Length: 370
Image (cartoon, rainbow, N blue to C red; front, side, top):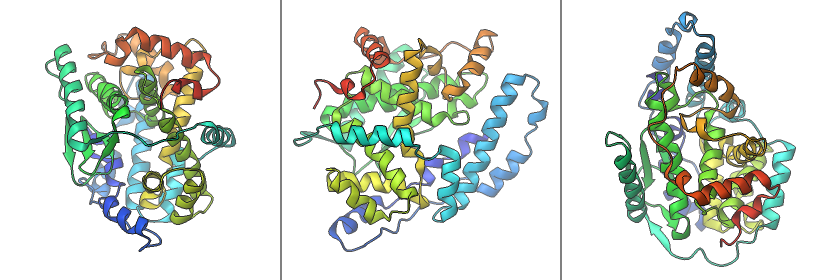
């Protein structure tokens, strides 16, 4: 499957983010200059292969619509990979992920102003300790389905924690607040890997890698998993708001140093601020980090209107495509999900999701958490 050959987020993320962190925070460099890995797949080769796809021969109109959208998105991603480190990358990113509208910006500013995250983060998990948590969760899913082919590993060439295909990648430099450990497990394993397994098992296998525009709804769903397991902390919600404002500042022309200084003024610790700015400024400017809060707000609206999350776990797709996926499902063209998220089996999660649907104030979702 061609989409599996593009490791987009991995390829636009610096391999030397930690080395640059030390220099930037020490003040020895004004603006970090990042290095990137060479893509495993040559963008020109993949582009040529995309041109050979006979999408006009797909007879089912619903499926054809979904596949054409994915085809356009992959073309855009390939163009972005060629444009890494240029202004063109930033403009293409806006085309792929969108910018920050006034309503989203106002919501982020409100959250940043009202959420109190005083005090120290407490105990921290090392990469090895978080790996153990993730592997325990994966093993629990293997009790449901012994053939589940998902994995987790610690690597020196990644930044933070991310899912790439069927693997959870953890930076060897990762340091994760213990209070957020389970929430992050449910975000990464209980959402991203679960939907990968379910999607890869569909006749439409692209659901495992993700249909066009899936990221926003997928990240919103993953944040809902944090809410569902009772682990969305004020610090985390404030972090999502800070990401939105950093994307806005980047698009408004702020330098890396200026965006970092703005977060310091917002009360964000220097190290956390560096990570936030690095994520947004990587490869020339990636607006993806605005989608976490936007995706959460969209799904809150979906739940408030009486919508269900069930079909969203069949694979990775955008909320806007739910009617098309439902059509395929009702016509028997999709299989039942192989895995049900473990966090969603907890009756307390259902209560918390009901609270999401009923609230206009996201800060209430962090009640009782530090």
